[in-house]
Length: 542
Image 1: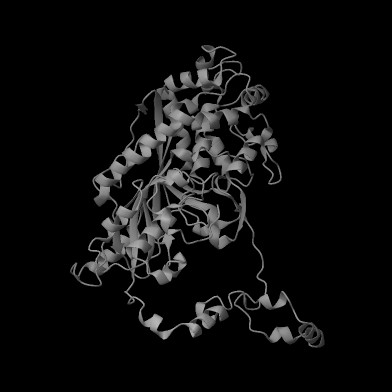
Image 2: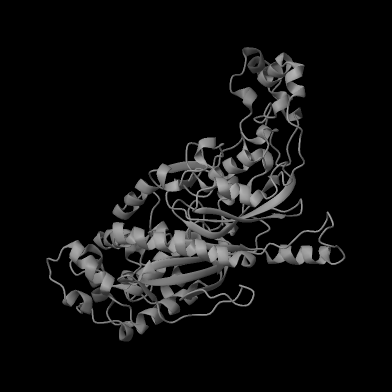
């Protein structure tokens, strides 16, 4: 997942995302922390080298940063006024051309509330040579005039940021982008309407809110709500004869009696779904039967028991990438995780459980709602652990083990089922509420709260038309979830030995950073390796 920013082309705003779908998924993240290098040392002259030899202590007198290292000069000349080529161009510019420029319009720190279907786009954040949600949105803002032509070449000039970053193929019913925006545009009475007219129908702007100058989309966000949808047939145990099935059999036999033996079938027991099928049935025949299968009450109860292990403040080291166990940033607080369907309360901030999954077409779907402080990139790993434990009769206590220092491999479930419901800004809203007490709504200092619920009708329409329907259509035609579970079941290595009836992580399940598994190699096809620093990795959290 590359995090570089780049300006989108103006021709990309109106076309649906599917037309320019980027092949492949976001890049695998690898943290590369390098010490800063003085640009003057890259091509040192002989005089400098000789001078350093004659005066070995001269460098000690150079200015130091607060970390005790020499000041980094790699940004020297980064600003436009320091660039020689820019200065030369300005000197050659005809003064008459400067006078003909459009007048500078004031920019205001603003928050754009939007929703989108992520199918066919390379994620939320702007990337070079890739079609992204922010790229399409930024291009529309430029064309409308909300971003001036002077700032059109670089989104960082208007301090573009987002509350939550989403991977390729991930949807958002609500997300927030903050930037310095021209809100009063001559000839454009309704900026939101004008921008939406330039956007494809699967990307919608719900509203634009004036925010305080200190507002930061990521750090001002208190928590995020996500929902993951998956077909219930993922809970069917591995097919007899598959690699994972044989691994589970060996584990069950070697473990002998255990405290969980009473809730698990005997090792040689075959799940009823597979006893009714032919040993040589094709994958297409199996898929049709899987879609007709329905989860029982005990299956849903197992999911709920395992899901409770995710709640609270935990070390999500094994559920992210690019972090060490000792990194304090891996400590995150999960407010709630529920199996069922999210229902709106009076203010849209309460949840209730619905016991029964929902059937669409021939497939039964289950939803898992996450409400957490922030997520270290991979909610999809959390869902994977939840599903794999349930379908392999692994006790919930193994989730506690996954919070420990031992590194294990957890394959990610497909991005297709992940939906960002919306980010929550409770602290910011309380802050501006106190500021607004003595102000009228016409006062220039008045700041409205950030509230997605006032756009609920439009949000629900987008979810139904462009997210839910497309999600089911994609699964019906491409069988994305079946392909994933068959890939996992085909693997017979030791990396998944933590799926066992004892609920422990054996030493053989340690996942070395240098080891490669078949499942891991397939994920590599989706995510090419990329090098990024810690600042970029932090910006990817959401």
